[in-house]
Amino acid sequence: MRKWILTLCALATVFSLTACGQFLLLPFVWLSRPMPPESEAASESISSPQMDYTAYSIDLYFPAGFEQVDATGTGVDVFYQAPDGSNVNVITTKNNRPLASNVAMEDLVELLEQAFSDQFDEEVHLLDVKFETGTLGVCPYYRLDYSVIVTGTELYQTVISINADEAYTITYTDTTYGGWSEAFEQSIASITPVEK
Image 1 (cartoon, rainbow, N blue to C red):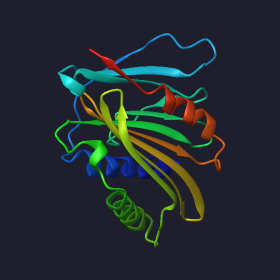
Image 2 (cartoon, rainbow, N blue to C red; image 1 turned 45 degrees about the vertical axis):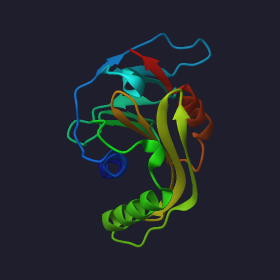
Image 3 (tube, helix red, strand yellow; image 1 turned 60 degrees about the vertical axis):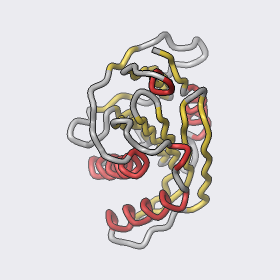
């Protein structure tokens, strides 16, 4: 199980390196906000104010049933995991990169396929790839959805990368053949830029 966690964290780091340019972990503050009555999901807010889209931090709810796990030494800032191994992780990096909305799907797919292939010593291809870019409020973002089969196990991942006061990469990994898709979509819908 620990190998899977480290592997998934390493792949999340690949996203961060690809979309965020130079990799640099920075200190940040997590603030809790009251959970909505219809959900037991955890909520966290990340902040470090500046100006323009950089004057915003990101707030989101983590799905109910996911517990925070110590991610020390993994390259991931925050790591939530379900008992089945599905997880949500957040990586923050210095916001000195091209805008997330300017990232090309082909570059991400190529880098991820190479990272998976290198990690698992087998040829790996991303399947059912979907990609979009845009703005969330004033914050540029991209979203990449795909499935992948590694060592005979199928994983579903959604990666959201957002430029705000920091560059945020939030990776949702479902090991249950889509069992968490609704909860993940609710968490993704909760991602909100919060002006500081």
